Image (tube, rainbow, N blue to C red):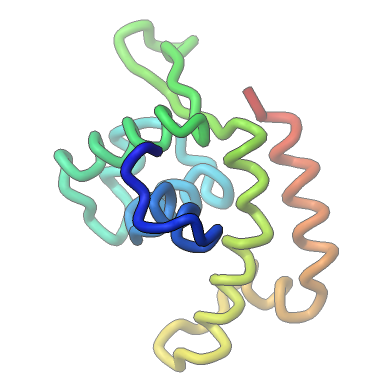
Length: 135
């Protein structure tokens, strides 16, 4: 990323994945097994198509995602995480846990309950699953 605000590691990281849409796309790939443009559009947060295109391009250019032709439909693309993207898993889990802990309107669902009871085991399990899918 050429135009960074500062050399602070937090600032540099936020330049890449710090907006809500990028993190939600990463969440959808990591935890909800979504892989296509249409699946991302169907997410409950209702991302606009132009923003989705922009964020997918950004995440791909930063080598967090890889875009490939779908093996099932040659006219569509699918997205998957790189190792760089998969390394965000503990951060995504921490953000989920923090949000559930401090926002009463964000109740813990099944994964959130597992995170609350044994966060390290959940991170390990999900990391192993992601390693099998990494491009």
